[in-house]
Length: 60
Image 1 (tube, helix red, strand yellow):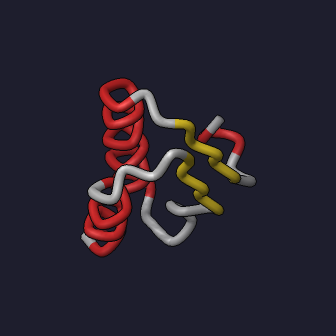
Image 2: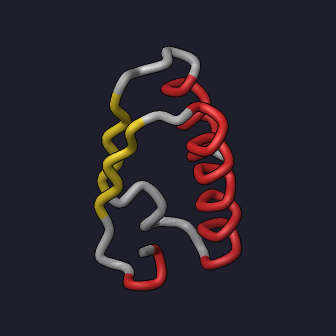
Image 3: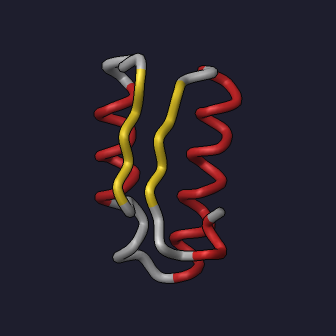
């Protein structure tokens, strides 16, 4: 829930570029999947540039 709130707080500011460094690393698999889907939906709607850094090959 904290990750969702943090993402909402940033998105409300409408930044030109969103930098995310392993944002879902501390989440369990189900929560990570939900957050990835949520982020993709926001990206599709807002057409924002998102730089997403991860070491998890499934997040690519």
